[in-house]
Image (cartoon, rainbow, N blue to C red; front, side, top):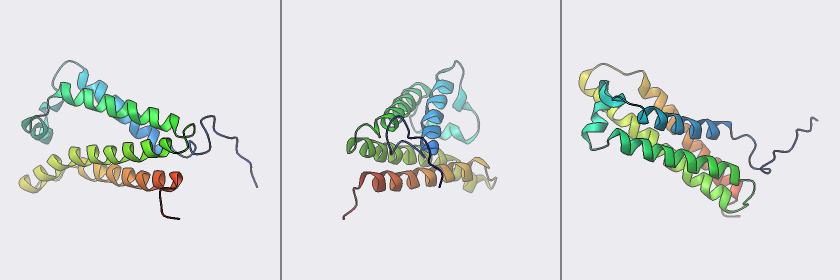
Length: 145
């Protein structure tokens, strides 16, 4: 039996690579949207702009969500009850973000008949986030005993 070193943030901070990558992905998307130019002016993502989301608002929202997820992941091992609860909420919001990013692309694919290869990727990110919700609930012991 191999004994692995204990994670510095606590026992529930290990095996969270997917959640860290999603937090980093949200932060990098926020950075990209904050750069000069119109990142959402291309393709089916124009539908997001048409619904009222400006790049500035989306950049701030993604930065806040990504930062809060990173904080929740760090606090997860330090705060036995609130850490998993924050992870649960962050993963759920992350699933909503990826699903909302996927919906205009899927809608455009259905209307135009041209399938976007990003739709399955965003769908899998949504599924991964929902699995992270389950893991956070399991880690926090929010289930009935």
